[in-house]
Image (cartoon, rainbow, N blue to C red; front, side, top):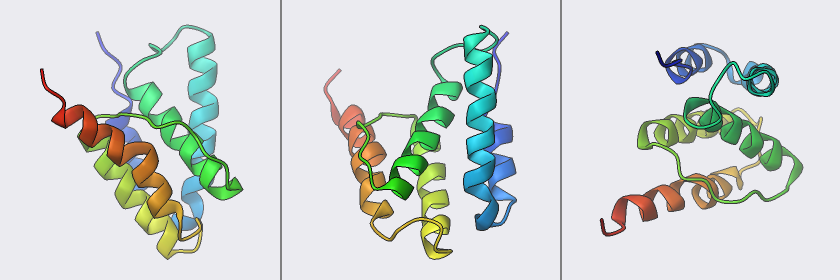
Amino acid sequence: MGIHLFPPFSKMIDGMPPGAIVAVVRREAQMLADDLAKGRVPREGEAYSILSFYRFLEASQSGHEISPVALPMTDTAFYRKTTERLVEAGKLPSDAREHFDTVFSRPTLKLLSSDP
């Protein structure tokens, strides 16, 4: 039986004002880290996706860089839309768009275009 984290997470984030998103993602990441430490969720998959987005948000706000991450296209599209909302609301710097592409979009496109 798999644990499905991304659908309820993305629905929750989509329904909230931009000003609350970073704090909610931070709290979700803290709960996931605790769940991972206690073996309640698998290290890969949806937990990894959500934690990767949290690290991106933190890095964008602090001006730090993080390593590129390849995620499922649906996750990447949702995070891109959320990043746009945060930039437009002034919750992330304008260069977060380019940072997003470096971290998520380019690795995903490379993964999709690689030969089987």
